[in-house]
Length: 242
Image (cartoon, rainbow, N blue to C red):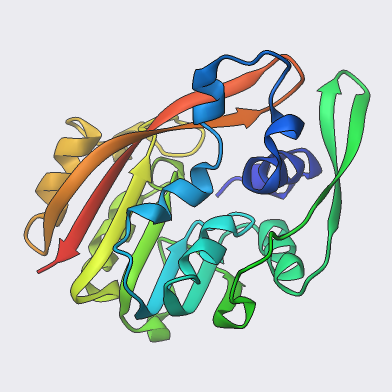
């Protein structure tokens, strides 16, 4: 997989994406749609049911905000990401550290910021580790909740993860998949793209083992520079293990 996610630039963008305040992300007089696209890593795990369960798994957790959100209702959460720098950042935040990073403005101009974990999380419930979503360790066992946001279309062989999901989710357990469906050859060879729409591909692949409970779209916003933003809609599907 690409080492793009080991760069300081991407680490800074994702720390801002997960932990930045609205005034640190948005330009003055930002349109309402941009404001509504904030806190994506908080909103996607919010699709899980509200009662407490034993175990949760956050695949492609990046710098960890969705894992922390899952810890509110999971007594144990494992966050896994392929990027060592992302996992190191998530673990340092879990340990109570503040992380300095730079927000790019333009060219060589940047602003120094710090990422901090908001209060109120059960940090002793979490464990972060590096791992490949296409080849997860065999001893993970099954989970009550599995969350994978904006991961599928960044995997070279996404089918390998889908094939593993039935063994990762307990009977009656919950699965949330979110994907912007932005299939790019730099991440996934075209021969491994779905031959139908991503939603139809998920239904065809998962329906033997999962019941689709609902689907929706969640916007998200990634700030690249003071004048350039990625504004994207992610397809969010909620499934229950048969």
